[in-house]
Image (tube, rainbow, N blue to C red):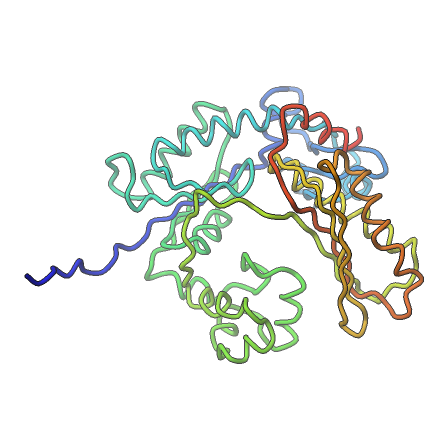
Length: 366
């Protein structure tokens, strides 16, 4: 007996939910005196880092991962609030419980951001757009916070869509719209293409999605290696990555490419402090800690090296992460050639226990 043709697979329905200025919005919700004021969650001292900025602060150019001294310079009226990661995790749990009413296929990216595959939802709903609206309404009613949502047929476009009408917005990119929507975007707006890659693409004359789509896969592979297939696909509005409910991040890292090559230990230490702060903030956001610290160095001649150290227990503070990173970099000083790039990565990740949140808070001095 011949098997029946199951027919084409259904078009996927992917939602990307992104809370609006999550940490800062929680603080403004819980303290009415902060509402309408420029708020930064993080440390206000010399080495503090902004974990999140309210929309009032963003109008002055204040952004997450920005050094606190820079943020204060941009907005003298900025109100700094110490982070309460235990509270943020509790609210995130409420939000994820809302997601679970609609689908088991939830891929968290951080406490305030997730992908949902609602191709086969747990509820009767006329569309993915209706589900996204219902989720946003439930979040507002149950937490007092707002969320932005993007709806599309793959993860790449759903994330682009959620950014399109922030804050408190919803945008849909249909299969018919996808390729044209991508064409007009500057390369810097592509999720998955970082600043260093965007610079390399611009050097090749690739400035927009249309420019990227015109490139042969072979050329992209020569310049970008394994990532070429992904870039080739997203330039055409294609992204086959599944929403992976089991996915666990293996490492958290940050890199910085310098405008000019550096030789000086003080400059290198300042860069390591910035990178360590960004990594620590990302770990705090995800509720994880790690035992292995790696420092990556790329020299002016593009030769690259890395040094790593595994510790008996997870790194317990931002200052410890910086100290280990400095110890790993020190044997290479003074360098015999300029340093073009530095990177810091924390791996061997594990969930932070209940006692970890005060440590994360202490890493952002107040």
